[in-house]
Image 1 (cartoon, rainbow, N blue to C red):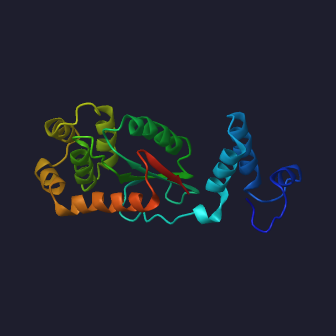
Image 2 (cartoon, rainbow, N blue to C red; image 1 turned 90 degrees about the vertical axis):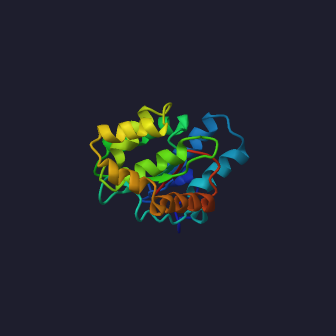
Image 3 (cartoon, rainbow, N blue to C red; image 1 turned 90 degrees about the horizontal axis):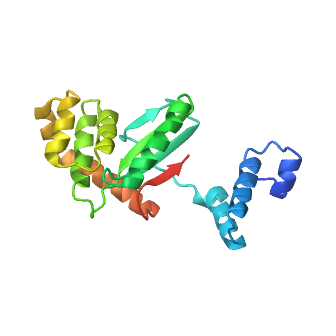
Length: 202
């Protein structure tokens, strides 16, 4: 994992070389082996994590974020508000931000799935809330009420958060809000999204 260090991971760890990648590489390999993965699976996991060609640039401009302003770790998540796995992942990701507020930043991107009837409406609603500085508040409320995201329920949540409802309705129906969702979905498609949540770290 360390450029310019033509030694094995084991040697790198034993000699405590200054490469920051050798210990995480050794831990990844250990964990994969303990999970009973085949050699090909272990090598694939190693390449996915440490191959420089796997690194991609993700534009987070205009996407809501939470956590450190100068982070050492950036987590970018694509999610759907009706997705039960996204709801579980959201709690885990937010816990990382809470545990390391000066080191970790979480960035949210939208990927409402077609099979979820209210997912697009929920995405547009949270974008409208973001325009009034209440993205994370509505984000959390939507996940807490994931099983009832009908428009009237979402409007009730927005009202409880003290949003200007006239502005909320206009922003929610705007072409600009839809453009944000479309942008995020195009980015995810280009990166090979296979389902939600879809997460990149650093």
